[in-house]
Amino acid sequence: MTFRKYLVLGAIVLFGSFGDVLISRGMKDLGTISLAQWHHTVTALMNPWVALGTLLLIAFLAGYSTALSWADLTYVLPATALGYVLVALLSQFLLDERVTTTRWLGILLVTAGVGFVAGGPSYTPQSQRQRIAQGRIAAGPWGKEKNDA
Amino acid sequence: MRDFYTWASIAVIVIGSTAGDVLIALTMQRVGDVGELRRHAGTLAVVRAVLGTTQFWMGIFFMAIGYFSLLVALSWADVSLVVPASASLTFVTNAVAARVFLHENVDRRRWFAAAFVAAGVALLAQ
Image (tube, rainbow over all chains, first blue to last red; front, side, top):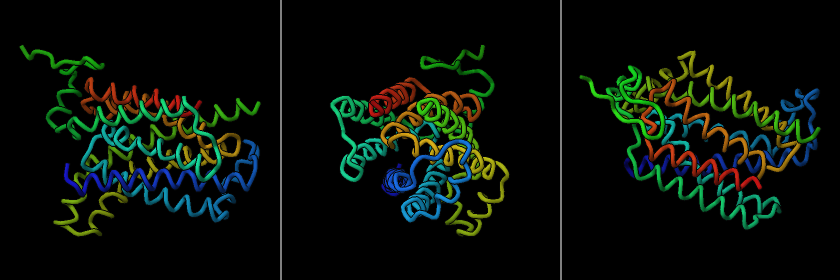
C-alpha cells in the first residue's frame, strides 16, 4: 500500500460521510416520504442539499471503484469504516443529534475493526482466488489450506 | 408502521448495496489496477474498460436501488440510525458474498474486522 492509495481510502471516507450527512439534511426539509410516494425520491434530487450530497456520493463511487481495482472488498469496506465515526460526529455538530456513551463505545469498536484489517494484506492474489474457488481453502474464520495429497 | 417502513427500507439497502458492491468489485478485479492502466493506456482507456462492462452498470443499478431506499429510510428515521444499521448488516453480508462470489481470502483477521465494525456500527445506531 502506497501513500497515494491511503489518500484514496481517506477521500472515500470524506466523500461518503459528507454525502450522507448532506442528503440527510436535505431529507429533513422534504419531510416524510411513504412507499406509495416513492417517486418523490426522484424530485428530492432538486433539493440543493440532496443534489450536493449526491454529487459527493458520485465522487465517493469513483474513489471506491478505484480502490477496488487494487484491494479486496473485505479490505476496503472495513478500512473505510471510519466514515461511520465521522457521520456520528458530524450528526452531532451539524444536525444536533446526540452522541451517547453507547455510540462512543461503537466508535471504539469500529476503530478497533479498522486496526485489524489495516495490518493485513490488502489483496488476494489470483492464484489464491483459484484455490479458494476450487474449495482447497475451507470457508469460515478459521479456514486453513487443505493438503493437496 | 413507521418502524416497519424504516426496517423494510434498511433491508432493501442491504440487499442492493451487497449486490452492487460485489458486481462493482468483480468489474474492478477484472479491469485490474486502474493506476497502472492509466499510466500505460491513458484515462480514456480506464473509463472505457470500466463503463464498457454490463456488470458495472448492473452494480450501479443495484446501488441505485439501495440509494433510493436510503432516501426513503432517511425520511422516516435519523441518519444516525439508518446509515449505521444498514452498514452494519452490509458488512456481514459482504464478507460472505466476497468469499462466495469473489473468492477473496476472508481470513480470521478480516472476519474479526467485519465483526468489530458491524458491532460498532450497530452500537452507533443506539
